[in-house]
Length: 418
Image (cartoon, rainbow, N blue to C red; front, side, top):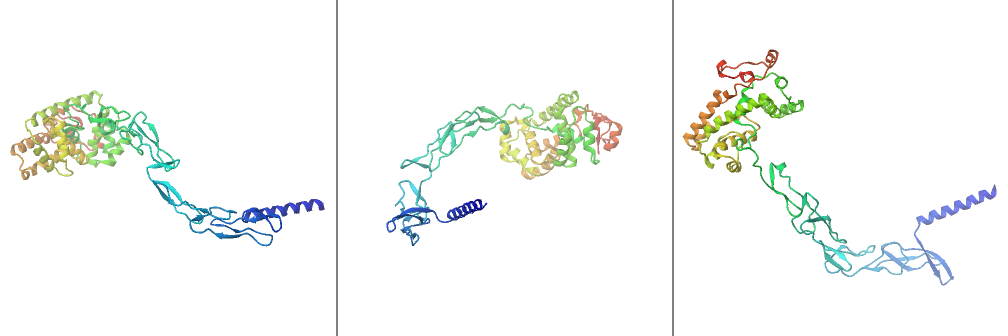
């Protein structure tokens, strides 16, 4: 028992001594000529050197490194390391010399160290992009541009760029890109000349707005959506319309979306035919106006709200036939102003055109065309449009027969108004 206890105490003593040694300064062996013994001397800390080794009766004596000399770790050296005098050509001092660190030099930006020289970073040629940028210690890594990407310049920094998505911008690809060239986009001329890129024509707008009562019950939009035949407008789209548009505007947006979703329905096909007849009559009427750029720009300036700019007018004159330019610009105005009523906007503009010295004959022609729409003659070709609404639904919607009377030829939703 006593032997076991003795061994335990010895091991504990060794462990304690080892821990103390670990926490103290590192040691080094030194031969003491006076005693002819190998002594364990303490090393000197960073920033100093051994001025005198330890002896049997005294510890190691350390001294600080002189200027332009350093010691970056514990050591037993009898002198400090000398800091390099100057950096080489095309290098700069990244870290200055001190008693605990050496002077560090680095190649100037755009170069890397290869052996003893600062070489320029490799530039990736066209068709290649930077996979890994060069550093002061390593060169640029280039890679060939993959499918759908390109690089048209020589660069040590530029990565491959993705080809422009022409369709996302409303254009089509004129010239397909490759590894050294981007896609070249051009105006999408696939739209039919008759429409000239108009999302909702004046006849559609007149028809859809004609169906909106003045006083709308709270659940008007949901009941109307439920009454429409064919593919139903989703609840999500109805809620989106409610959030984005005013109550008077919501029915117009709902009917527009319903028509888009039901193009193959016989009823909608008939509506489209009637709209085309209506549009043809409009085009015949405005075709003789021969409006110049100044006339079109002045007309747009007379409209209320956000203006259609000169660039839009120039672009419209390039894309659209003369008979379509006014209709296209009015369509742009409606979009810029949050789907506002184009007919009301045009009526406002016509009242103010005189102050712009606009040709009187053109003003009279535009007024006559607008009166046709307001009087219902513009909508008359749409008289066969009928949406079945039950008597119960009519009461829910609060609909009353339109004041134009039974001889207008307008039925269904088109025969209800304020």
